[in-house]
Image 1 (tube, helix red, strand yellow):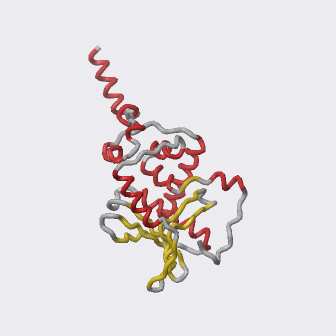
Image 2 (cartoon, rainbow, N blue to C red):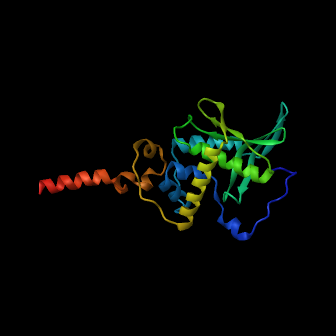
Image 3 (cartoon, one colour):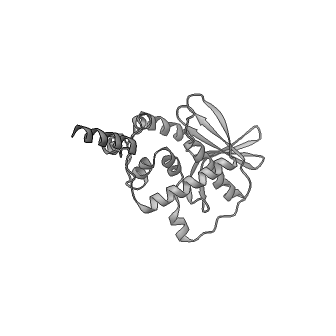
Length: 219
């Protein structure tokens, strides 16, 4: 992407160990969803994923343009050997030669930090590829239709590295975590039929203890 940047050098084993950058967002949103997609190779589409795919498709045609002194690149290949991820950035703006990642998302800003982690991972990839600091990026949501700046600060970097390490270990182990049913998350997930969270969810300890006590009382 940066014609002035030297290509990365790495061993073949390191390349084979890289996981999709999108797995970080999936893992933080739901570890079981992450494993279903990246270990069991399952996928299904619903309205939410279709809207997101259409939004990404607009940004995933490789091109470069310059406007008001800012060069904009789309569909930018990324990788970080330090983080252990590879993927594609929707948009990278070059502002005075410094990369500024912009990630496109459907809907509105979310309460969890999965989108921010995905953006931060892109920033860390760009830092490794360009050799310069990337202190900020932006999320562009489909409903507000405006950029939401995100500071790539120490806390977000630490969370992103933690999530990347957890996701890489889980995918390397090849195990799918048990379901944990959360109505709001599960109802929006396109894999709900394959996951069957209500039928397979592991009950929490408090709920199990209440049922055990109730059963003992009835006896």
